[in-house]
Picture 1 (tube, rainbow, N blue to C red):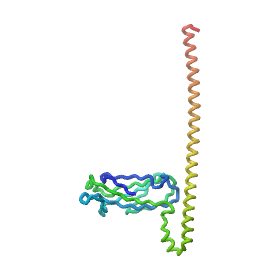
Picture 2 (tube, rainbow, N blue to C red):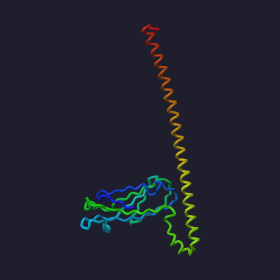
Picture 3 (tube, one colour):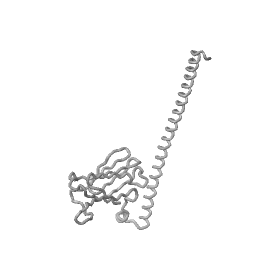
Picture 4 (spheres, helix red, strand yellow):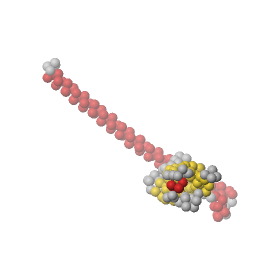
Length: 200
């Protein structure tokens, strides 16, 4: 994934680190990023200077922030839901690059994709079949986390729906009562008006 934006006032908020825009709890996320600056002489993007980098802030659904830096971030989600990754320049000299461009290369891996299986196979001395079984077990574990998260979302949605239905019911009852009271008041008022005019 490559993002290109004017460097002055760079602020990227990426709220889609997972295809469903949300990740289950206890899921590992690894992100790697690098920046490139636009060079007007060569008309191309070149690696950025050592003083210019990115500051990464990660927010979970409870809006607890975690700060990361150095071209890489890793975190494990402790709360299911949408996680936001906010990237902005750590340089205070952005005025130097006014009118320039900054390109950000961002690579995000979620769940079982964060495992380095060749390294695991070498460390644990696993055969190809054992490694494949390990990969399948990790995938099954990730699927279970996804299912648990979908159950959690369904429960939350059901509670919201029931609460909304309850409020609509009470609102309808209140409207009906207001209409009945208004109708009774109008009938009494009209009756007294007609009696005062001696029309009845």
